Amino acid sequence: MTSGSTTAASPWFVRPPSTDHPARIFCLPFSGSGASAFSAWPAVLDDVEVCPVQFPGRENRMAEPHYGTYEDLADGLVEALTPFLDRPFAFFGHCAGALPAFETVVRLVERELPLPERFFVSGQPAPHHASRDRMLGLTVSELRAELESFLRGRGLEPRPDMIDMGMAVLLRDHAAANAYRRVAPVALPCPIVVVQWRDDPEVGLEELEGWRPYADSVDIRVVGGGHFDFMHAPDDLRKVLASWR
Image (cartoon, rainbow, N blue to C red):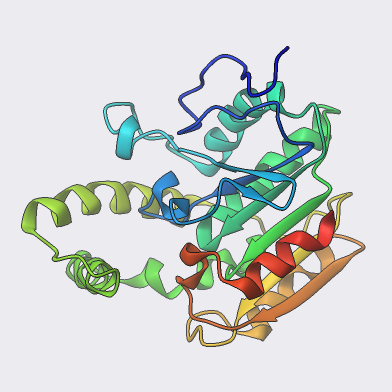
């Protein structure tokens, strides 16, 4: 296979993973968003290829049915990722994206498939505390206001059609988040690195400590910035992500 060649295109990736790099990091976005959350990230971090994952029911997959539940999403992810587990890899999940990432690792274990060398969790309480997310208790009008504020924070004017499209995705994602339940920790056989954003008012150290029972090795790293600053791949975050290679 020649340099730069790829396997067959998959709707789960906005760009097919290449064969040029010795490792991959699969990046899962937060509720209401898609792979474009990682559009400002470099294509490669050191020698690790960045592979943003595109969930069904948004962006270029808007015409497809929503994934429904995190469990169904993880089942689909395992099938989609299996051809690309042929080299060392890691998962990065921001906010609620860490939960289907966790469920995907659980399924990789159950099916005796290759496992990630690191599981990076960014700004998300542990699965058995997932219901503590403040956003899950907001009304539709409050969610709409949050979405408008988010878009303005990204320098975008929140047009009504843009808000309507975003809300259609966000409400389905929140339904999946509200339905998700893990009543007790499940230990994973891979190290977990939990990223706490220093200026994040939503998720503090106490919530992130809940990840401790999920692996023998759980490292909590504090980085500068707020909840959505991961989108710019700041230097502090890049240093954390580079720690596994």
